[in-house]
Length: 499
Image (tube, rainbow, N blue to C red; front, side, top):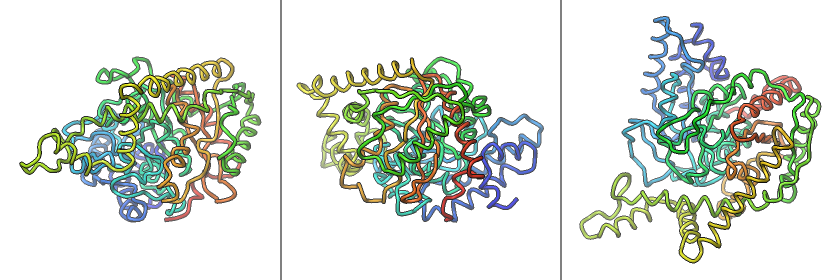
């Protein structure tokens, strides 16, 4: 097979061909490395490409197959890893100058599980600094372009991971989702992204932004590929105190047997209205009709507290980030500025943070520190946590009536790079539909549901399931995906402009 054929294969197809001997893991890895070399100067999906490390992993997979050892379901499949997970011997910057040049001495639990499953890690992808953003424009290393239109954003904070998928630089990727940073990039790039139930994937070795919200998850071009990756990275981890000690739901089985027949699907009235692009609503309404055709019962839902989710989130997340980022003091690891013998430790810390943190990180640290300060804690942070409880209760009531909830993933398609750079509120509105799920800890998926007619850019359909019912996402997602493929005769992503 030629390199151009190899990079268009799904992860499941690649694994099958490597296991059968039709392809070698080295061939597959080299094809994707060549693709990165050919297009990433334009896309800028990667911050670091670990060419030698990836080829070494691929050679190890081929050696296993030659010895007749059983290979896992993703053995030899290349993956793009968001630069927020520590990777032994490989730079981990979190998109920030404050960690520029830092080489972790250990692997995150997620990284370990990928390696144990013989997944080939190609390198680390670009992201908004410390995962704070919805466009990847806040990266200290420059923005990433959307392969559908390189002048537009690929979403954030995990825009590097979603762009790598859409540009065929990798068949699999890892993202993290604090307020929508897996699902929103998936929506605007025409890919699949899943936020598992909070605590389902270990956060050990994942650089913290907001500890009660952060969640790693799988990104792919198909629902089945996402399920296969989900199964590899999920599971209890004693090193993470928030890790759930429960079996991983049967996500792969659900993805292989997609159906919505007899399911009750909720549509929340708060997830539409002012600020939603007409083409996004049109494609969402068509998706709801498609679900009806596939045998689902549609139930209208009213979740009034969802209107408060954005405000609550932008108090809770900055408050937690102001605490988590206090460790970056210029004294223990990472960048250090002003250590010339004339400054005190406090001055070195101040100078390091001034030089190392970008504007958005500073904005959120200041907001969070203010919300936690004496005299304001109850009025701001405390009140936001009460709203969080109301949102959780609204979800609980909703899931008494329905099996899953659907909505647009984002109110608009990908916007031009720079359009919202000076308007933080406009940027924050990109996460309007995704934030409630993070506040409640539920599971959610975004998958493509067509192109908006006004700009011919991808629209995402969000599916939300109760906590620990992640398999429902894949059951519904696979059914919708199959219906789209049957309707148009090919996967949506193949319409993406060529690089």
